Length: 223
Ligand SMILES: C[S@@+](CC[C@H](N)C(=O)[O-])C[C@H]1O[C@@H](n2cnc3c(N)ncnc32)[C@H](O)[C@@H]1O
Image (tube, rainbow, N blue to C red):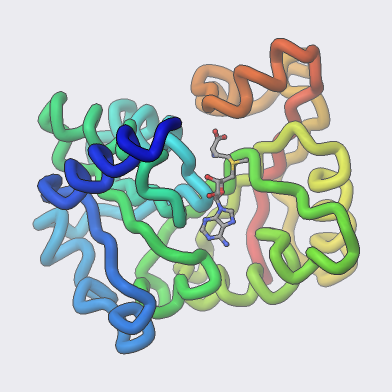
């Protein structure tokens, strides 16, 4: 994407009521919406579901269409990407969608303990190199961050094309005694994945499918 186009999207994001783009400093002081997303932003008490590393926000928007009685927030550091999802939501008058531009590392500054019902992680960068472990979105430290903002029985969903990420996460879940609710190492070949796993496809997913890569899915609870 050209820098002109990006700038246009950045400017347009600023006009959208459903986009929140705090500075790092503002995050570190705790977002004013923390603990108040339902009351202040969505004007209801419905469950809140996050998509982390949402890119263009396909899961955020498509899940929101299917589940109007739930609220969805896509989170990514790249605002020019989630502009796509934010614009679709604005244009179609969807009231249960928001996007937050921030680093996932800072997520506890945006959500209070137990504020979130469910988290989706969709096609995260696998960060295969050992030195990059700390950036892997399902490492032990990230799981503990998610646990602190999730409700007691909160659900995690990981959908990935990366065999490494799938295996790494399953190993970690078993090793640390978390609860694996469901695992599928080829969702389009092995039946049984929830419908939304095969019905909704992201931008990255469509590229991986063209390469005939297996798409995997794990649903789990953090203990
Ligand atoms: C491979 S892309 C996948 C995007 C989208 N989920 C999809 O499937 O098309 C990974 C996304 O995660 C975002 N991301 C990675 N690490 C992040 C972090 N620590 N904080 C915020 N966003 C992050 C990137 O900006 C990128 O948009």
